[in-house]
Image (cartoon, rainbow, N blue to C red; front, side):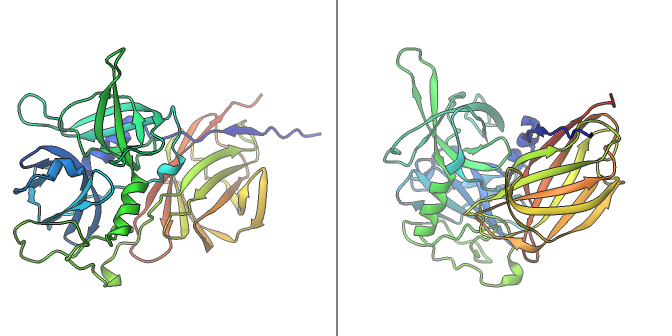
Length: 388
């Protein structure tokens, strides 16, 4: 009798180095009557939107945004998000900059790692810094300025407005307040959840969906201030929009039915598409980043179903679009895109496992549509042992 060994393999997250690489390209320095930081949150053509704290830019005057390449961009418009210590800034540039992938702060939990990046006011000219911490609690209810997330880390002036990331490198909040613990003197940092940013933006008519930003005038005008909806119109040309997820889907589990080399096995990847995803999930790409052999070389069957392995739902129809040993890439397409609010599991059946070793695959998701922006869903890790 053959015994099938079921060994759960937990999906691991991006390394701090990988998160920093993403953070560095979207965190910005804000210069003016006060100095602070911010994050590029939306783009359309040459138009960009940056989110920061209102207290960074509330004083009248001219402000500039410095991107990671050292370029300075005039703030064309600033707008307060009523209901929290938040502001949206607008600038224009012919250069293409990356945009933050937004997560869902509803699923944060105490103890998880968080990362924040910005331009602290250290000695000399502020330069980019990347910090790590842990989520240690929540304010319930949030305070009057919208602060809810509490996490550990270094408290340094100039970091107000800095983006806060989870361990998948997606934006989960905006940092802006610090308090010292009376007995120990250790700092507690406070952030505004990204869900609050999205809710207040929608309330004020600001479209942060995907990478859609406002259409700025071709000739920048002097900075104006407003607490009402933007007077700069949203572009309505579908061809100019980059389709992207709002709430990013997540790899929540990865397992294999056999852990020993050179025997048949099935690899399962379970993905949750959150309610606020904004777009259905259409394709999944697996890119192998470690392992001396190619895990996908002997795939002969693909399958999928709604739910998890312990709670299976209806079967899915899918296709294996690519299985490239040279690029170590596997691409699966869902015949019927997966709507927000669903969890699915993809199975890849191999004729035999690769040789022993540790195999990591970066999982990337693509929304349904044309001209789409991919999203990092997480990293799957499998350990294959030598035959007994």
